[in-house]
Image 1 (tube, helix red, strand yellow):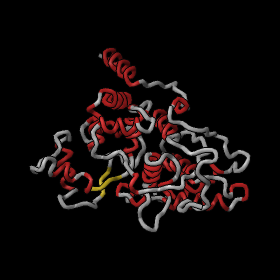
Image 2: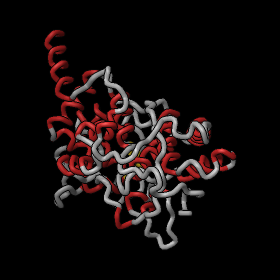
Image 3: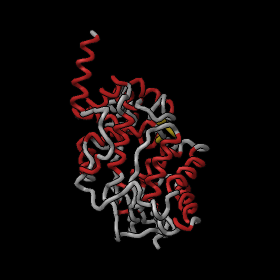
Image 4: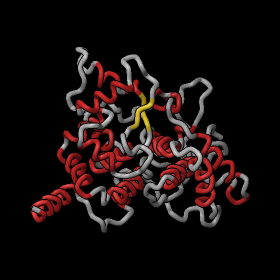
Length: 334
């Protein structure tokens, strides 16, 4: 019996391409990479950049651990609109910037990026040198590390964008099916494995009843629930979320929402994914096999896979060289 299970696992791992020896740097094969980033980009100008961002991020996230999910989400949302150019940080007095879009209204943690930028601007060699896009990429990594999550290398040298438009925000939807999600990711140079791996970030953080009420109370307009959901989980959610409740928080990974681990895949496999975008990962062969592999191996490769995919995400449609600018204040163009 043990041999049979082992053989099944080997087949699963072969399907999903899991490898414990896979190196970092897979982003070098990403056809959407334009321009070069460098782990030592600031060595001669602001060598303290990573230690300063780490210190500031720790000061905030150690006191408010839920900021880790928020800051990771901010980086993801930034990269998925105009690329990783810090455009999500820009404010608009007319309320038509990216941060004013409905999916971004619940994004928080801007003060962490601003504090890191202010700390860097007080140092002579770093003044006017480190981009807000790079700071956000570093803050996301350090925030996850504070709560015990995986670490990944962050090549630096991004420039800040000058444009931020609400009308351009078209993020992967929590209501989307797997076919749509795969296209969303492919459009950004990310593949199916990146989709299922980065979905694992839902292991931390919370959502709200407003995003799931239709799914549990009135899925087809007949007072029913989504048949893709575990009925016992639906009963639990209904106790927490009344039909008109849009504000009550709901853990995205019940039982493990404060810990960055592979437990998310266990709850998806049990049909307890909070969003349609979680549940639909079971509808695709490749994403389903990855989920089953993480369940069987207790997430043996999740941390490494997540790190690899985060490196790739950080290269999406970046600005380098003379493109864009280095903002003096992250919320405003120069």
